Image: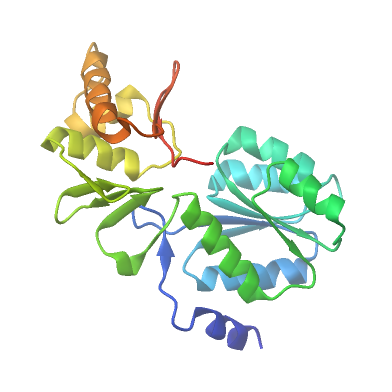
Length: 251
């Protein structure tokens, strides 16, 4: 029965991966082992890396190990509630997408879930197809996933990079980049919402050992900002004392 449902869920739908082509990582948190097993199986069928946890403490341990892109989170857990778990999760993965599961359908419960920082809300009983579809939508809107059918394209918000053509557009407008600017932006786009240190950027883009070359990164970040963010809502952000992060614009 589960296999039939999952086959129907995947029919005619391209696989979804992280921007760098690796499997999406999803954490399922529910104290019902049967439901957790069914959800885990359906999400693994999508080609994603999935872990399950039965309570809040186990969820936080799993999150630290997995660093999930998304969490399917039951509101009612044996040791705490999903809202408290979410607040702790954000200290581990600040930009994780969260889909709440609950047996309660009251408007105030939905508001509480969204206010707590959840991205979407599904009421039990639900269909596997609905959960998978909502997760796919959340991940794509957050700029954390791409379809394999898209080929060598990276997409973060309205910023698109065609790696083969070496073309970059934002909101459809072509952006002219130097080879080094292109490689720097590619590294940022392959790690959306992740803070990258100057040392990491130097190592990946310039292959330099870190030491007195921070100004090189600062200089090229400033070049990128003038081209990518000029006259637009900024996507490239400085995290003081930590590095830089590329994030889609949210409204």
